[in-house]
Amino acid sequence: MTQGHAEPTLNWDALTDEAVELLSAYLRVDTVNPPGNESRAADWLADILDREGIPQERYDPGDGRETLVARLPGDGSRGKPLILLNHTDVVPFERSHWTEDPLGGAIKDGFIWGRGAIDMKGMGIMELISFVLHRRHNLPLRRELIFMAVADEEAGSAYGVEFLARAHPELLDCDFVINEGGSGSSETLGKQRPVMSIGVSEKGPLWLTLRARGRPGHGSVPHDDNAADRLVRALQRIQDWERPLMPAPEVREYFAQLHAAGILDAEPTDAVLERIAHEHPRYQSVQSNSISLTQLNAGVKHNVIPAEASATLDIRLVPGYDPDEFLDQITRVIADERVAIEQVFTSSTPPSRLDTELYAVMTQAAKSAIEDVVVVPGVSTGFTDSRVFRRLGVPAYGFVPWLLGPDEQGRAHGNDERVSIENLRLGMQILHTAVRGICS
Ligand SMILES: [Zn+2]
Image: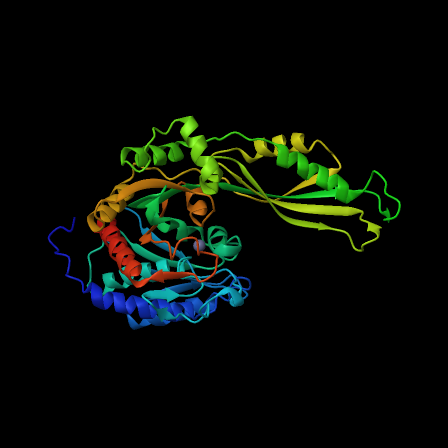
């Protein structure tokens, strides 16, 4: 509550026009990672913040990959800062599969087009607008508000939030983080009903490389120590390995709330969760330890038996699953000590709680703006920078509060990524309401 300060009436039509222009321009800033070049985004954001009279700091890990942090002081009476977190890099694209230039920021048919519109420059602009509104209107802050635009999320964050955690840990000291990793949808399980998912948890990546070694030789004389054969046998055993569904408490809560809202007709028993997993690959993944075979490498020539063969596995463990336990299991499944297992990247983090003040504030903000919306906790199959905060015990939430429709969904990392102007407006309004709710 605002203790006597009335919130100013905001002109959301004008703010939407401003946000559309900003997002279009931001999408034209090339921060495709690799190589990233996120200092370009930091420069671009710094110009805007300068115009608003807001100072910034830059953190430079080298190679043109700066992170930008801007702060608006609060009186601290409600606690430590709220961080509005966004990453400035985007993933590469295949130009020939796009209708519009992925780096063009086209505004067409009610949408803003470009790589990063959804993931996550659109949210970056929504956070920026709420942030600068505080300065323009001198909105009272009872905790510090931080705008943090980080590099390198799409390639593992070594130059981004992991760099900050290592070199500037004081920057991560806060009460709450709002980030990507949860958003709204106009349709769920075949039902046309707005559902807003607040990201509270994510699966833990366990990226492995399998490396088989054998004896090279002439392709005309097969022998039983072919590295490629050995690898194929190991991969076959992994493919045949049946793993049970293990829905985390947050996943059960998600389905229970969908059932309570009438979106999931059946009681979410184990059998029903299993049926849903069968029908939807995403729900299968979210409930189980998943393995995708992503790269295979072997051989130098058509008629040479290779001495080495390797495969990369993108494994994602259900939240809370012990990576060492899984490593033991997969070692037993492979059952071949001449297939070496190398651990490339592992992360396992606890969920953010559902009973915090911010979770309630975000729920209320969504409900106040969208009639009939169902707000549920979400578990993401992918990982985000939230993991670094959750690791530190800081509640971090995925809350990109727009309602993606069929034209926008599934386009993050895909072709013709775009977001509607209507959604940009909706998301901006809800986000700002939530920020005021936790900071004023
Ligand atoms: Zn992202």
